[in-house]
Image (cartoon, rainbow, N blue to C red):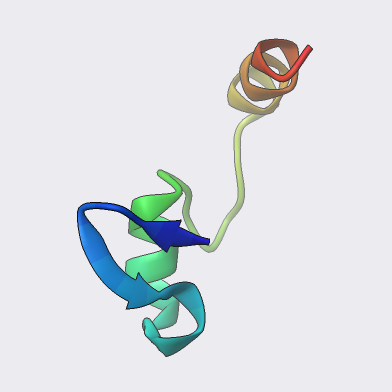
Length: 42
């Protein structure tokens, strides 16, 4: 995963940066958000 707005490869980012880029948190996604994201992949 390389963000085109930030050329840093994902593995060079801190955990906090990766979570922010993925709009997630250490607690994970809510059931509603997980379902929304899954549905957008279909």
